[in-house]
Every structure is written in structure tokens, then in C-alpha cells.
Length: 235
Ligand SMILES: [Fe+2]
Image (cartoon, rainbow, N blue to C red; front, side, top):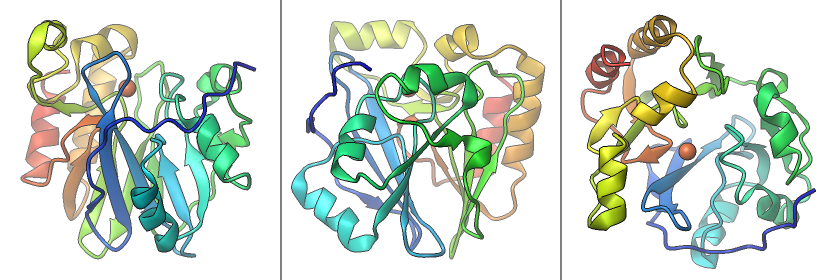
């Protein structure tokens, strides 16, 4: 196993409380001028399901802990494992899930309990598979009082442009500038563009869709279906 990374708080925003079931927060990455996003779902039984963990400051962690007991952690792909071990050290009962293809690299930092398809489902949380991507990362549908929100990882970005030289590089790589499947994702994740586009169109047709939560960048809450359908045209 790799040397465990201690609980390391990098600058992050306030928790965005999208519904009674769904909270999300965006925070910095070390060395890269991109934001990353953690999303937390309060399951039917009141326990918390965490997607793409970010170590937050104690005030924000206190808010989460008052909301529910952290019970499950999804490491959505092998690149999103940075704070996984710190979360398991803090919450030893946490059950960890990741795509089967990511398990060897995720297991290098944390014990994996199962693949995404092994994860229990309930009326709140529904994994939706996307065809045509090598990372096999899932999209998660959250059903709450507002309707349905979709949680993405690296397949869907909505990152604003960033200032400075590094920001220019990110822009040139096609990773910033609004909703998109990035050029990097198309190069390293997308095996079959037509299948990915088909999956995104199906997701765009989700009834009562009110939010798209990207792996990196801002939550889309306006015209979520149209934004996702438009994104599907440019995979
Ligand atoms: Fe990522």
C-alpha cells in the first residue's frame, strides 16, 4: 500500500445544500488549477454516501457529521483516490466502492469492499451505467424532493476558465469553459463516442432532472436536460 496521506485540508467552498438529500462542495486540488467536487447523499436510512471524498475543515466536517453518519464512500475512478484513506482513517466503518477496473489502483491506498454494482441501492440513490468509457465510472441518480439530480465524475466537466499560465494550459487542453466532455476525457476515457453520446441522451431524458453535478466545476441547475443533451452532441 502507498504511504497514507494524512487529513490535509486544502481551500474549499461552503457546502452547497441542493436538497434534503443532496449536498456538494467544491475544493482545490494540489498542483493543478482545477476544482474538484465531493458530493454527499443522505440515504433513506439517514446514513451518508460520499462520492469523491475531499478532506474539509472541521466546521464543514461537523456539519456533515451532524447531518448523518458517513457509511459509504465511492472512489469514482483511480484518479480520485487522494483523500480516500484519510476518510477511512477518520471513519473506520466506511465501506468503500469503486469501478472494478479501478480496484487495483484504489486498493493501493484503501481497502475496497466492492464494485459499484455491489453497492446497496435504495429509493434515493440509483447507479446508472454509461456505455463506451474505459474508466467504467458510473453516473449516480439522486431522487429527492426537487426531482432527480445526476452525479458525474470525469466524464462531465463544467469548469470556468482559470487565470494564469496554468489556467491557460487547462484552457488549451479543453478542460475549462463550461459544460463538456473534455478533450482529455475523449482521449483517455471514451472508447466509443456514439455509445457515450447515446448514454448521455438517455440521462438527459431523466424525468424531473433538475441538476447536473460535475466531477470538476459548477453544478448546473438551469436547463439541466438541455445542457446534457447539448453536451451529448459534442462528445
Ligand atoms: Fe477528475
